Each structure stands twice: as structure tokens, then as C-alpha cells.
Amino acid sequence: MKPDLSVKMFGVTFNNPVMGASGTVGYGTELAPYVDLNHIGAVVTKGISIEPRQGNAPPRLFETASGLLNSIGVQNIGSRRFIDEALPELMKYDTRVIVNIYGETPDEYRRVAEAFGGVSGVDALEVNLSCPNVDKGGIAFGTDPALIQTIVSAVKEASGKPIIAKLTPNVTDIGPPARAAQDAGADAISLINTLMGMAVDIRTRRPFFRNVRAGLSGPAIKPLALRLVWEAARSVTIPVIGLGGIMTGQDAVEFIMAGARAVQVGTANFVDPGAMSSIVSGIRTFMEENGIERLEDIRGIIERG
Image (cartoon, rainbow, N blue to C red; front, side, top):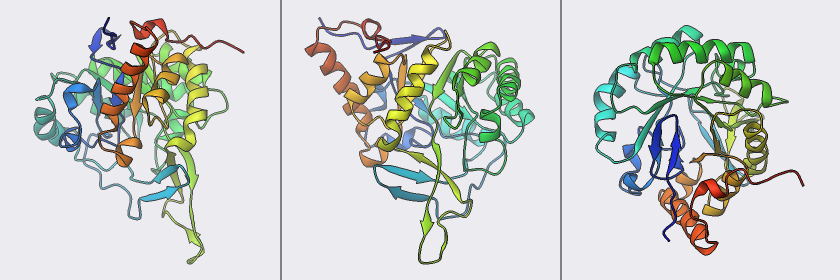
């Protein structure tokens, strides 16, 4: 029997559990020459703010051992241009569209959510509560359960769309922020966003990035991401979307076994633009070889040792 890779969350059915992570697939169509967007579960756009943002000054990327540091600063064309220009192109594909949104204040989050409220073709909003490389918002919001509740509830009311709260790993206990998002009306949570890191230029004897801190992603963070997804899935009843260092189908299966309803693929897209297709195939092959008919049969099966 052909395995069923479909996933259902907040009333939306996804062809499979593999999504392109925000910040690594642009506005969605940039990867179209390299991967068939019709064959992935969803595209999660780069962060969209109410007004255009220039982002951080270069340098912006630094390769580390088994990972990547980035300090992009949420550069984007703003909500109006995205809706008018980028979204119509993305809607030509048979994949779900999740728009990642960002603000520097709770009111900015509300305003950008409101801008997408009546827009067709957007299946959900992912609320970036955890960007570590901007001067305002981001990490401060994601570490404060009270602010998480304020922002999520405002976004939910303003947009009327399903809300995914993207959480930071830079906390001592993932339970309180996860439960705060759920209590505020989030329909799902996604984690982890990047870890805070830095790099040093020994020639200039200064930090490599102008903002000093940058976000670490890639295989280096996978063990931590896996543990936090496992803990989060046991802290809330809403779906958990796992991400952090997923490079192969086996990685994705591990996250699903830890409790993830779906997974997002990020840094792997820079290594291999066709990575998401390979990961979908890898999940299917694993299911076929092990006689697994549905992802639900293996989701969350990892218990305490």
C-alpha cells in the first residue's frame, strides 16, 4: 500500500509534512527552478513586516562547523508589495502558503496581521516571536510569556487566520512560552528558531557581524531542536512543527517520532536547493520499507528511556 504522507492541521490539509522554512526560500518562487513546489507541503515565506525593511548591513552570513550564522535583519518588501506582487506568483503552485510576519512592537504585529486578514491564498500566519538579529522585538518577545500572549491574541483577532507561533530556543524551559501561545489562541507552534551565536574576525579583532549576535542554524543545532520539540509536544495539545538542522528524510522522521506534526527545512536549502524533494522521498522510502501506512502511526512514539 502506498504510504499516506498527508497532514492535517487547523482544518488545512497538507500534501506532506515538509515545509520550506522562513528566510530560506525567499518569497517562495525563488526555489521553483530547483524544486517542484507542487511536491512539498507548504512554503513559509520570509518574514513580512507592515512596511519594507532594508535589513542589517553586511556582512550577513558566516559559515561555521556544521552550521550557518546569519544576520539578515528581516529584510523584506513589506506587506503591500508582497500581497500585490509576490503572492499571486506563489499561488500558481499546488502548495500551501504560510506567511511569516514580524513587527517591532505588538501594534506592528497586529497591523501586519490585519493586512492579511482578507487575503485569499494565505493558509496561515507564522508569527516570528524569536528573531535574534534585530535591535528591537524578536528575542525579547519570545522569552516573555506575557508578551507572547499579547501578540498572539492580537494577531489572531486581527487576521482571523490560523496562527502558528514561532518560538525561540533561547529560554531555560520551553513549556511556559509554548503554553502561553496556546492559551492566547495559537493554532500551532513552530520551533526552533535560530540559536544566538557570534563570530570573531581575528584580523580586525572585532565581531564579524555589526550587530555582534547572529542566528545559528544547520545540523549543529539539530540535537537541541529535537529535544525542545519533544518537550514542547508534551507541553501543549496544539500541533508542533519542528525545525532545526533537518537535512535528510531520516532527520525529518526523528522529529515526527518526537511529536512534530510537520517539519520545516531551512539551511539544507542552501546546501542543496532540491533538498526538500529529497526529504519527502526519504520519508516515503522509510515508510515503505517499514510497512508504515500513515505518519500518525509513528508520530510522538518516543517515550522516556
